[in-house]
Image 1 (cartoon, rainbow, N blue to C red):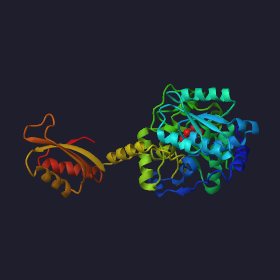
Image 2: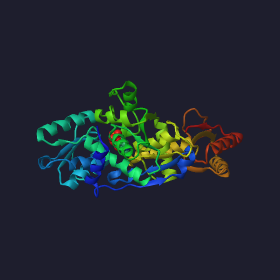
Image 3: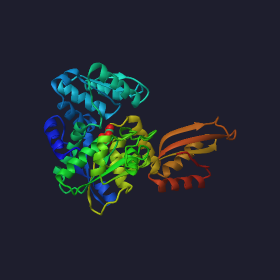
Image 4: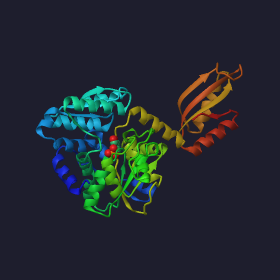
Amino acid sequence: MLTYDDVVVARERIEGEIRRTPIEHSRTFSERSGADVRCKLELFQRTGAFKLRGATNRIATMDDDERAAGVVTASAGNHAQGVALAASRAGVDATVVMPEHAPISKIEATEGYGADVVLHGADYDAAAEHAHAIERDQQRTYLHAFDDPAVMAGQGTVGLEIVEDCPEVETVVVPIGGGGLIAGIATAVQGLDPDVRVVGVQAAGAPSAVEAIQQDRVVELEAVDTIADGIATRAIGSTPYEVIRERVDTVVPVSDSAIAQAISLLVERSKVVVEGAGATPIAALLTEAFDFEEDETIVPVLSGGNIDPNVLTTVLMRGLVHSGRYVKLRTVLKDRPGALTELTTIIAENRANVYAIQHDRTARNIGMESAEVVLDLETRGQEHVAELIDELEASGYPIELLL
Ligand SMILES: Cc1ncc(COP(=O)(O)O)c(C=O)c1O
């Protein structure tokens, strides 16, 4: 099983190649949870996620012949970029197989770090199969994303930094996909301080480790469905699983809506862009998915920041709708000059701001003399929305809340 010394050796190997990421106290999340929350900001790692640590360590363990033959992996996510950068820095040729529909941003980022990208198959499994064929044909080393002790040891260096920079830590909260990150971190922190508790978090739509612990064996899920694409993994690795069983206190699921809310809060309050996987520890904290004491020193690992801008936009918009700061209303008014001005005057008097407006005389189900108006408004919260609707209805406008 992975040892503390493995992680210490990994750190010596990768020193200088990776950034020591900061830990910062969060007033917002401390106030909201009642704990003493210090975030490990691993999203500021080069490439935007911790994966560079494990890939750099694994490549450093390769002999000259292996290096000359190069590495291959399959990934459409952070591992692809970590491998690409680690390999090009070490002067090792890297091929990364991605599913055909991989987002162009990820393909470009991986190529930009120096790897050859091969597009193959409809999903990750098909890409991985092709990567293994390349491994066999070209005698390349397959660089697994998590089921490899050297990769786990590299990821574990996050844990060394946590205990060194925050010796008072009592609980570390870590996202789990294949389990490499948490296995490394648990081994590192408990090697330095056996009393530190390690909590794992998964998306409720991809609960492979939750199931594995319940059934006491590695379980392969039939399908996964979550906005946290970095941890949308169908099965945890068997090597990390052995470590998780021994060293992780509990593994909890969190819903996509809790993850989305955590992403929004991190942007708005902490000014950091965190991807779904990286936001799961905050989601677990805010929903009290695990037990903790008042003022307990908790370190959530914000493991990555590579969120697709479209996903981020949707998450932020939904967050605004959820908190009543953005609404879409439909109403009907008389089709005569000045009618729209009267409506917008009431809106302005109630201090709501028009974001978009659509005025349509040909809408279905309205009288010949009427017009349908759909308004997107910036508002100040649920109470303000309720007041505004009351005011509009009192002035004779029928209101339908669309968002
Ligand atoms: C941002 C982020 N966080 C967490 C994880 C989970 O890591 P692991 O698969 O080692 O459990 C991943 C995996 O890709 C990730 O990209």
